[in-house]
Length: 283
Image (cartoon, rainbow, N blue to C red; front, side, top):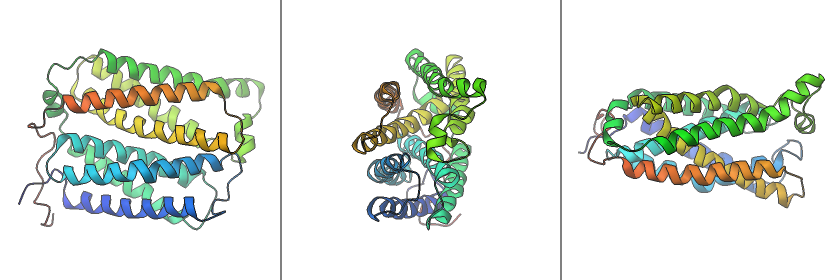
């Protein structure tokens, strides 16, 4: 039997995530009136569900399969999509109005956290760096810094005026939530991660390559979800700032292009994780 890049526990958790994600998104999309959120939030959850079901689920399934065959490219994609699902169901667990799938969201949150952290721990950043050789890094560093600047501009342009005025942003009031979890996730996790990744990559440190690859997959997937949300929002007749459409559209297109270039730079002959047990055997 071939040696798997993934241990059996991560394969099983990934399969569980796939099944639960298909169930959660299918219910959200096809059961009328299932979500109890404010009308302003409904296009967002519908767009997220659609992208997750049609893009993230197939990408996770395919990358999982080829990761078990020892593909380093597939392993990077698997980690990136897992990061997207961690972000997605973190936001669902903390922000979506309580519904019958609440425990499913929480289960997906801890399963994706367990799998993502375990997968990162197994990644050999030194070997990933070696697998891309002398790949130019300037465009990747520039994109990550651009991401940091644009997200800071987008969210702080809402947060700072409300803070100075001693008020609450209109978007939070319309959503009927205590705070915007997306602000917290983006400013507290994504922005620092991209800034650190850009710095490490500029210094050509191994984990700079690892973070860059995984974050590119993650933001490409998330960007697609945001664009799906835009479509649902427009269809619902709700206004959406042009700046958000331009910023997220640009980030999505550029991230997809850089993601593809990075993945094809990886030497398929170099394994970036230790070989686990044969997939049919137990840990």
